Image 1 (cartoon, rainbow, N blue to C red):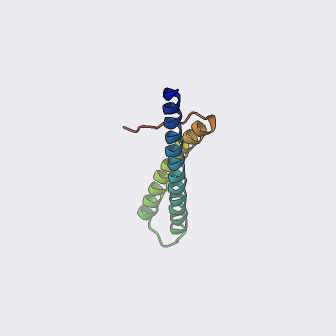
Image 2 (tube, rainbow, N blue to C red):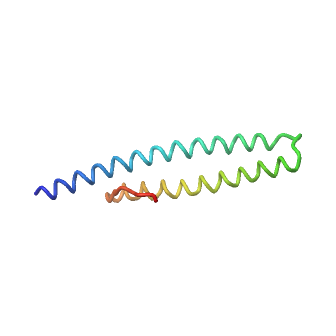
Image 3 (cartoon, helix red, strand yellow):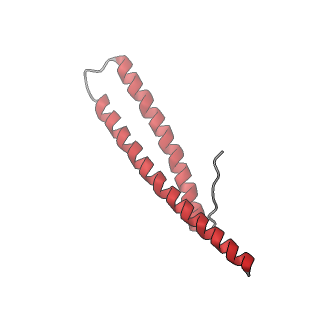
Amino acid sequence: MRQSQAETRRQNVAKRSMAKEAKQLTGLIAGLRKSLEAIRKQRANAKLSGAEIGLLDERRNNLLLTIAALDDRLSAVQGLIDLGRPHIIRVH
């Protein structure tokens, strides 16, 4: 019985931890999307040189890649929570 209670406790801790991570990821993604919108507005400025446009494009591409990776992570975390199989994800 004690082992079952300990396992339930570990599952609850893991679920809370993963829910917290999902909330943090959601906030981070929202912030990055705002940055992406700011870059789009900045790029619309007609007075930019080719080099400045290139830098903005590179920043935009890096943001898009980061957002995609974070979206994948968020999807994985939410999927594990939805399946009822939360565990603490260790990142090395």
